[in-house]
Length: 203
Image 1 (tube, rainbow, N blue to C red):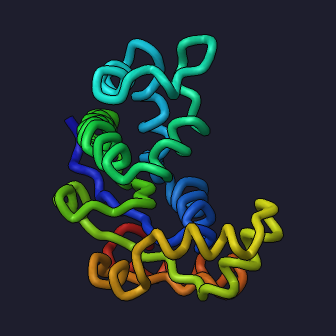
Image 2: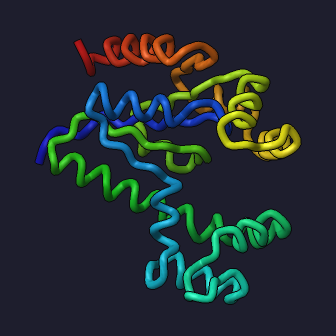
């Protein structure tokens, strides 16, 4: 068994540039990436634990013709029904975090020294997973511009998503380090390099 890897949770609002930071950690510092959203989708595939539990709790109205979960139909259900959203979160989130823990243990077995976990929805109940939480900060207007240009969202859609997410203050309260991602990628890269150097994780 190798040394326990240093585990960074990377969070921030939609359009803040979390994926840019995660890619830098992977490509330049050899971090193993764990994407919570991807793990959730895998756990909801037919035959997987979340799939069975969701059908038992909510029925089959969100299944496609092939029997797989229609993610758009499930998203519509969650958006329109707060109780359904809480049910889905209560089923999926514990399974995702259990899988994150399992994969961090696997990274340790593999001798990986740095793990970065994409945590778009930070959960204070599982903060013991991380050695440090990082908040990727980008101004509201820059995020809206990026989402409109990059994903084709309307301003109204951007603002609706942002209203449902944590505020800057709430993100900051949970995190030990903040990356200002309003500038170019090189500026974010310098902040990452300095933080990892301060932690003794790079020279």
